[in-house]
Image 1 (cartoon, helix red, strand yellow):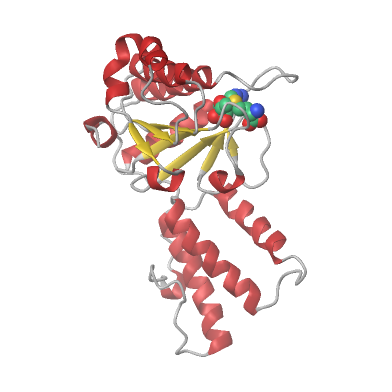
Image 2 (tube, helix red, strand yellow):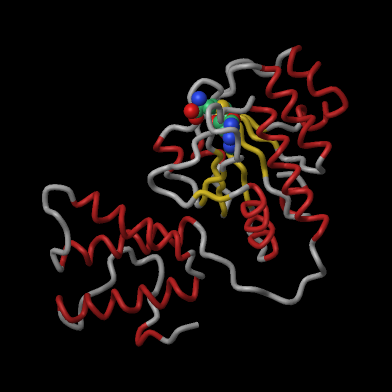
Length: 264
Ligand code: SAH
């Protein structure tokens, strides 16, 4: 891992299945102009490639340091806060942020020592649903209504510019702030929540996914902190106990819920 990703807290840039090597080179250049260094490539069609090197121009060091992965999950293994990018202004399952908001949230996460990543999709059809599911947030660059699909490297340039602008404008730290909980903590909450929804039969048995998705969307919109997630897990555990008796153990087991529900 580069010093940048860990040291200054700048997010990594992840290109998923980029088809044109020129876009990879132009991405490296866009990153370097804005002070970002960690480039991850998930199954690039051609890499390394002369066209990528030519388009990177003075950013050949970023290309040389690029990490290549067999799938998005492998690339995100050490990432705590994942921001997916989409050419569509509405996606079904996740809150969609403006570039400025997304950059601020990334800076907040970095301020708490969490590694972030900006994930970009295929030139042909963007990110798949299973890849969108890996994201904590989505970001959309506002465009003219009748054509919203930017060139991949142009989209990278705009978003890394926002990251740079926000970090350059950052005031000195005002002490630790509570930031929204990231993916793994929320995944555990969702699993627990869905189990309780099933236990109390609060769903359409024909389509439980629809109920789960509504809760998921609502919780994501609320952007709970880790303390608030513990509070919700404590509440779910109280329901568990009422239904299954006091000896019932919380099922995901990873996180000890806060019994009694003290809000933090
Ligand atoms: N036809 C594709 C667009 C792919 S453009 C689709 O419908 O999704 C290739 C990539 O560039 C996208 O996956 C996204 O990462 C980025 N991109 C393009 N336009 C964007 C926009 N308006 N906002 C955010 N990212 C965008």
